[in-house]
Length: 275
Ligand code: HEC
Image 1 (cartoon, rainbow, N blue to C red):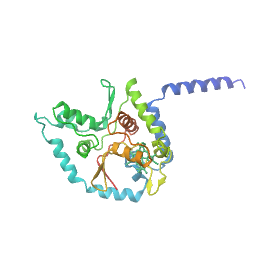
Image 2 (spheres, rainbow, N blue to C red):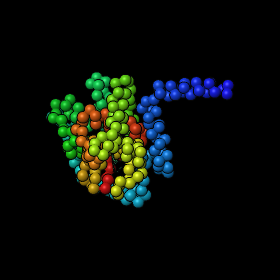
Image 3 (cartoon, rainbow, N blue to C red):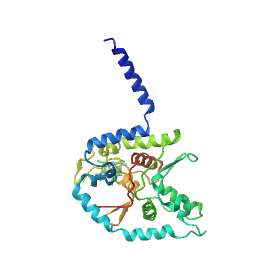
Image 4 (cartoon, protein in one colour):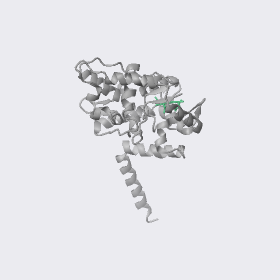
């Protein structure tokens, strides 16, 4: 009996310190723990495979397709776009450290000067702008393809998104709120499916976990049909009868920031084939 009040106080204290320190790192650890519980036997690195990690046959089929992926031609054209000199003689490689090798895993970044999240596609457009070139339309296949090649230079790089300072944290929190808030006629949140129902089937599709979802974009579906991460956001919103948001909207960029942080420490796999 005598010990009880102390234990009770200790609980209160622990609860309080927990709440005070809760943030991106704690969110991520808690999510990893839940995902491991839901997907026992799946290796951490394999979370980048999404639903393929949950099905041996599909994974084997995918691996054999990736030996000689059908989108190689598209990637070749994208390489040409990446290497093409600007009017001033510079090129994309001049805008990034190490010519753009192993940089994409640092995106999205938070830019304190503008108070905004900068996605990798935004960084490609900023490079065009700085060099007096016209920007590419966000959501267009031109920007998608360019990012596919540019990100291939970071294939295997570990995702290392940073959330530093109160304004960056606020953007992260907005992205997280969007992921967890219910919308649309069916009243689903992203988390209803990708956190709460990981591994369950919706018709023939098995639900992938949030962890790893942002680490392998763009995808070439059915061979050569390019889909970007934000394109996939729109598709999931449409599928759940919610109004899709705009490409490059602050909401989607914050969502991408939150989701990519959740994929930290996973090796990027870009681009990839999906059925
Ligand atoms: C009703 C369930 C459902 C909801 C709600 C939902 N999705 Fe999906 N989502 C799916 C299905 C099914 C797939 C295809 C199978 C898979 O990869 O999980 C998918 C795939 C994805 C993928 C691609 C995964 C990969 O590894 O290729 C991303 C990213 C994604 N969803 C994000 C979202 C976001 C963001 C939201 C909220 C705006 C959302 N989803 C809401 C069902 C859902």
